[in-house]
Length: 254
Image 1 (cartoon, rainbow, N blue to C red):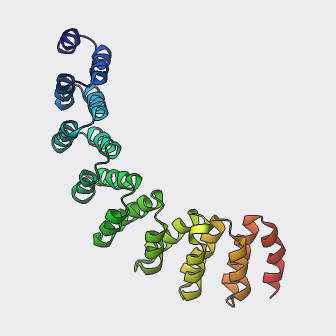
Image 2: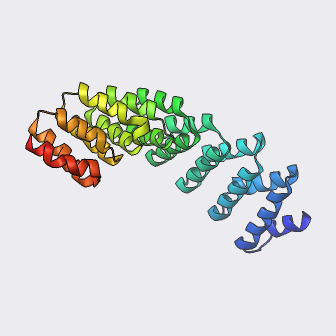
Image 3: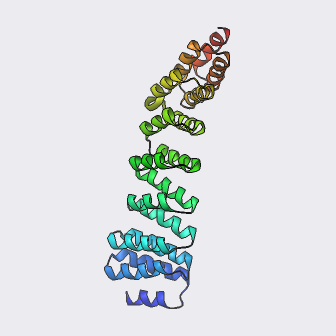
């Protein structure tokens, strides 16, 4: 360890120092962690600092996570803060990610924290954030994070109850991308209860995204609005399914 410390404190190249930090990170001793933590706090070489933070995250443990949090709080470089948010995700640090998602002033970093919460599966926290959020751009990021998490129930709720039409359409599109087994029944129910033509068109598009020809044919046969019937026929032709192809001519002639 003495030789490694001498290399780190001397005039060795950043590449050599990085290798020395890596070796220290493999030892798992408290002294090694302390040395890596000191470099993680240093700002003289951002690339070396970034590597030190990565190795510190590999150490794990309460002490390492606290150093990461301290560096995040004092850092000024977006690259450093974004990397630490990724390390928070790896360490399962929901509370710290949630704090950044709610309180970070930098929009990109806030979005990064929201995305990492999605990877962690923080459905309840994200949904609660969505309800309290007023900025549409941020709501879209939360919606995408819920999609990444596979939260079909939460997105279904938003698709049906969100007051902003643009966000509703975005939620409907996400439902289409989630597969028919989870969302087809919700989409069909929405279509039947909906009066807004733009929303209805979005539901038809969502059914096409999941390749659900059967549900689209069902909608088209019941629909009395010529424009919506035409839309259903167009989406069926794109799906290139046997059931859809056989039904297009019948639908258009009615």
